[in-house]
Length: 411
Image 1 (cartoon, one colour):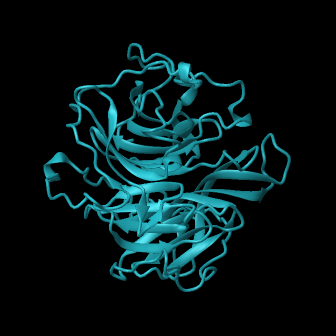
Image 2: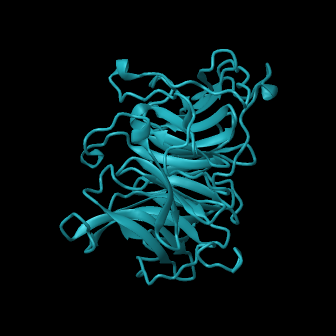
């Protein structure tokens, strides 16, 4: 069966999962509050939003360019990451309660995992993979991504791991455990140890992983483990409990710097090897950001920001001016512009900088002196951050393939 005709490959695996609460829960439009809403997009534009809730208001909603609700599905504890698949269905991570298949826990229990949603004309969940968790808080799967192979990449917060899941069999075909790099507690499920909240494919067998509680971004390679660390010393002035990093290419990454209440673009300094703030923004439309948890660089050079505690999604220009802003109730977690998703946008480079830079003098926008990124073939060493009272990373050491691990192509 070809990839184009395989329904699981395209995200259409009807597994008998029941309907969720459908369209209309939030009325016709979320772009109503005058202090946080600005029009400006063509009505044909579509933005997907994963809303955390938490329960019972977790939902996935699609907005058009004017902020009108195209469709919505929800009524569970939480949704986080959302992304449109090639056939128009939506991959989403979730947590929900009321399950009776609970493994080691007493029923009813909560489960977390990945769903595929068919958006219309009556939106419904058509596929689900999940596992039971001790508690919803700090255990939800926050991120998932469809890989070129048809497997699903999952960021697992409960056990602090990243794995590739075969959706046909429900089996893991590859796993990286954070305990291979950090010293782990006896039972990671009983504490919010690392809060691994994002994993994105950035190349062949190469993944960007967000370790929120360490203020680290890791580049993990299959067969190698951790090969690079962004913000190695965990400096909270650079990143402070970040979410949803967006890789812009070698030496550049866009990050929702959540506890610093800003969005930053970090560039790697060729001379020092350190990652430095090249651009940042801390407000939009005169409203300071409050716990932003997603930022995507769009192909047009704008940045799409999910400003969680302000309950809004904002598209803004490089100079900080607002293109569009929509009120999204109940703690939005992540937003993707269809069809781009987290497709790589362009970094803000020195070649665009000049004495007449439009960034200068705009409230909330900072553009420190930019330095060229490091060469793509250079790697940043891994050090010991235990002096900061953080988990102790293990030494990078020589490169070797762990026993039983086989690198797979097309992942």
